[in-house]
Image (cartoon, rainbow, N blue to C red):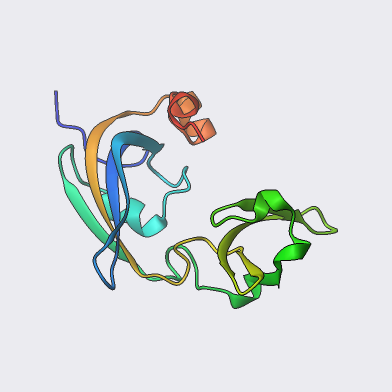
Length: 164
């Protein structure tokens, strides 16, 4: 049997690490393999998916993404500061999340990221917005995708393994 390589219509499982390219700090590490269907079916960054193309199990791929290629530029208009007295008590802690909805039904999740001098600041940017990051991706396994997986764009065990 020939060795599997990453190409369209394959289910690829990988582990990864994200580092801040500026200072080298590890931002996130996933050691339990997560899967996706290769070939533009997933939400995986296109540069990462492209870099994985043609690789095999055990290969390690490094991809650096600018803010524009990754998590977006930091948008200061997505921050909001208010007097802490105007904020419900359950949101008066760093890391608290609040969901806001506009008149069109669009939602944004904002996170409390600063409390000082009687004010509280919420930030709707992705935590990695504005950062250049480097992914270190290790391919754990590769297999043929089933028809249903290609139609849905996720491996059949996705809903079992992605506890959010």
